[in-house]
Image 1: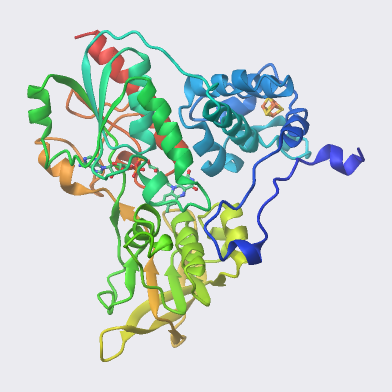
Image 2 (image 1 turned 60 degrees about the vertical axis):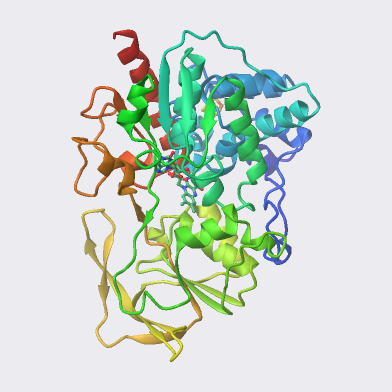
Length: 467
Ligand code: FAD
Ligand code: SF4
């Protein structure tokens, strides 16, 4: 082992960009056992591990890594599952670079952090492979019978449901869509997070005794009051931020304009990329502009490429330094050929006589003083408008809370953006109603939503125990 090798992490092998831009298969391959052992060996097993403080799911990181080092792979995943019900998901999509890995002592000594996320993925994938052979881990729980309802089967709801089931409650998880997972199945594409992996982790939650009711829109199919009458004693709302925002510019009603939400749902949940095997196609032009620069924008751009677009542009009003997407996602998108149009903002969309998009008219920006978000304000440069010929425009500028359920609950307090007001334990202003995840914070991260589901489960347990 040379010095250089000693001080850097084990890289994950992945599909070559020119290949993967033509398919929806997962991009990174995951560690082999040999690679995982080599990476785990870098962990110092700190007595007071700063990495744990960076994990909203409170995973005992040094203990699970030690188990990997000692080839006790089942123990490794069990340590993770003590506090995190979605390890294979988190190992793939969590922004570890801003959380546990950012805090790792090796990061501070300049050696580069232990790749905790990659090891978490290895532990979860190895356990899943063993479960497929009939030797995975299964939990058994004693029940005491109180009925609780969890609304929304995204990361916050799944975590809350599994933690409550582990505490012995009879949990019913209500989901509006026909598949559980929330954004994990309708938003994040297959090449970043294979859906079978999500469904297998959801199966683990079902094994804890959680009952799933799909195609059930709480607020429509039944109200909270109806559920109270059925004996539910407490509620967790984890309905996410699924209402897409538009810019309010001319031409947004033209044929060929999608919200990222609709586009990604059609591609991922409805499997448009497998048309005609699935009868839900999606139309993508030769040139596609994606407006926005978060993970949602990167996912939309990379899907559009895979669906056959020849040119895909990210149109973003600030510079690359301010792009909110994970660095890895930006890197992957660029490698695959997505082009960045920075300091650029759309002002209108032009159509042809049939109502189809012809072009996106944009204006160039320069950076000004920081705004309330702390980022430099984009300032339009007068007279710099130009036309970008495209056939498809995907708006990925953010989402707000879905108002349907909230509107059906009398007296529930929300903030000016329409998000439910809840304290840091998930209490709302209604004693038996708790909330967490994107419906409270606005669009955030998988692990933040899971963390919110976890603390709310504790608060619900306290509430129900004191009743
Ligand atoms: P959601 O995941 O939105 O789940 C809410 C669920 O509630 C949905 O299934 C919805 O159908 C259901 N629901 C809504 N209303 C009702 C109702 N009335 N009755 C019953 N069910 C209802 N985060 C990361 O950490 N890393 C990433 O790489 C990443 N990439 C992303 C990519 C995309 C395209 C998107 C959209 C988001 C991404 N995020 C990422 C953000 C992350 O996915 C979300 O922050 C997280 O999923 C929020 O979880 P949640 O449980 O609050 O809500
Ligand atoms: Fe291991 Fe880094 Fe956590 Fe220390 S901080 S226990 S080295 S992962």
